[in-house]
Amino acid sequence: MAKRQFIDVAFDFTIWGINSSMEDYRLCLHLNQYLNWNFKRVHDIEFYSPQIKAAKHFNAYKYKNEADFYTLELIQNKNTGNILIPELKNIDFLFLLNGEDDYFDKEAFSASLAKIPGVQSVMPIEVNSLKSKHNLLIRHFNEQSKKKN
Image (cartoon, rainbow, N blue to C red; front, side):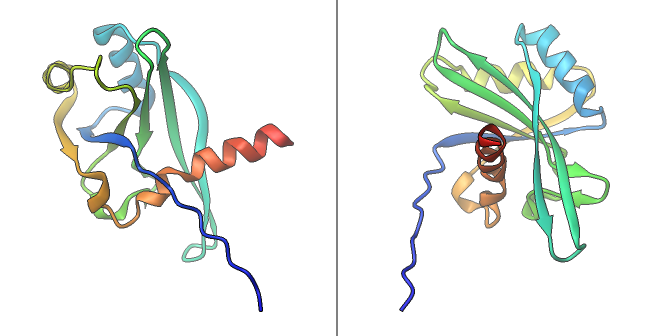
């Protein structure tokens, strides 16, 4: 009889959905300029889709605040007709907050982001309500395997 291992995953991050007609790199530029962050491009979220028999790629950017112990990520939700989180098909980008959120003012963030030219809307998203939330973890597994190679 085969043994099965189950991996218990904690989704301990906060997500906002961002609607914007800007390209991902341009949105990062605006975030860096208006909010004094330093987003940098990181490995794409990449996974094989049996429906299209090819890999799906979604651009990702990361900013790590060492002083306040939190990490911010901007992830493309739509790319060349593919959608990372299908339940959020009307959302262009996902903004994730990991780590200590005590020093991160969520209300001020939403208000500041809404003032950036080209951002149409910002909305909080309940992580546990997403059926395909595991797609957000794929990049972390890919990064670990790339570090080993």
